Amino acid sequence: QSLLTQPPSVSAAPGQRVTISCSGSKSNVGSNFVSWYHQVPGTAPKLLIYDSDKRPSGIPDRFSGSRSGSTATLGITGLQTGDEADYYCGSWDSGLGTWLFGGGTKLTVL
Amino acid sequence: QLQLRESGPGLVKPSETLSLTCAVSGDSISTSYYYWGWIRQPPGKALEWIGSLYYSASTYYNPSLKSRLTLSADTSKNHFSLRLTSVTATDTAIYYCATSPMGLGEHFYFDSWGQGILVTVSS
Image (tube, rainbow over all chains, first blue to last red; front, side, top):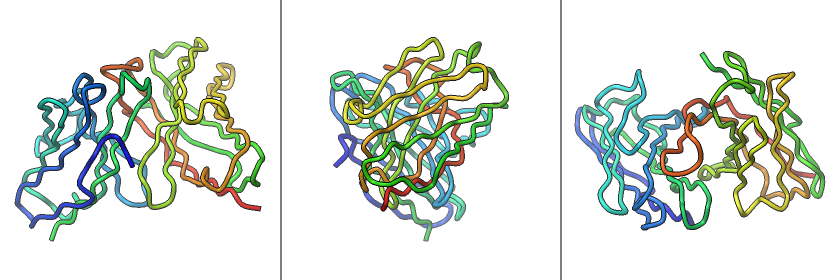
């Protein structure tokens, strides 16, 4: 059971918007930045968002990140079938002195 | 552009030691400001941070693995390594090496990843 809680799955139709939450606590999401990763099954994860709301170069602005209190959210607009993947959040936990990943969310584009 | 590639045995016997290497190209471990790390993913499960190191011999371990884990870097070969002792079936996973442009803490994240290597622990 991860200390960063994500919904196991989310789904939406092509062209729509979806959000994925990452709920933690004061010692992780509440006080440290969050990053998000996208993983197509059988491939390595890829960085989507860092510092809670920044996109690396090459990541389209359809992907956005935000953080409020101890919950971070990944938003994806204009959903495409190619967005189907597993999405993971991550954050440093200052209390435990360790890096945490969320349990992952499977996105299905209907 | 930074590239990472994991290598090592794909099968390890229970109670033995798992050793993996991550070859780095496109930058030098000894002059780069990156932190070099390992993450694993049991089949069908979530990602788990194993540990990270800075070439100047600063190492940071997941507390749950610390007693069995050693991370090291070989600047002459431009690679870094993982050594996990006394493995069991629960150590079966895809092992990824990855880089972090920031030190551990508030701004930490992983920006480049290797392709991963499946390691199975079985007799």
